[in-house]
Amino acid sequence: MRAPEEPLGRVRPTLVQDTPLAALAALAIVGGVALVAMSESVARIVGLAIAHGALLGTALTWTAGSGRRERWAPIEAALVLGAAAGCASLHPVGALGYAVVPVWLAFRRPAWLGARGPRTAMAVAGGAVFGLLLGAHLLVNTALTFGYRVRTGPLV
Image (cartoon, rainbow, N blue to C red; front, side, top):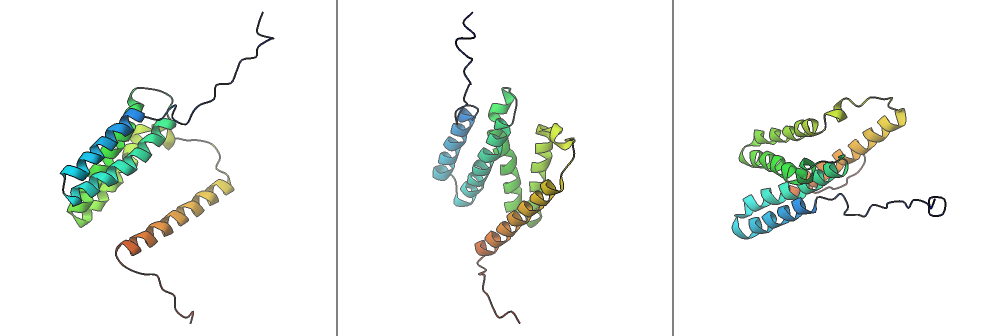
């Protein structure tokens, strides 16, 4: 009879509630070991894989329902990205190894491939604009990484 007196309180999730802290800690330890014990080129590959794998794996964990396998998604993502980065560093054509990442994502979330429902014109336009901005960002960063500078000249 207490239900009318005391309403059910809402559960408010915290920032780290579904965050895979154990996997992120393991990645941080591996990153620290890589910085100390490995050559600079290998440490850069490991660092890239850890940073992007942590972000991608955490996003996968946050969007998952539940399950023990999901808690280790950052490590799995770091391994996939590390293999792709290693291939890219060994051979110029090795950059095609990054094509494995969307295949891995499709394997992890097959429901995303078959997502049904109408796509509004605004959603498609928004996706195109964000994709264009991301592509421009990557092109500028790549140019700056290789030492090319942006300079302006006359419009004629």
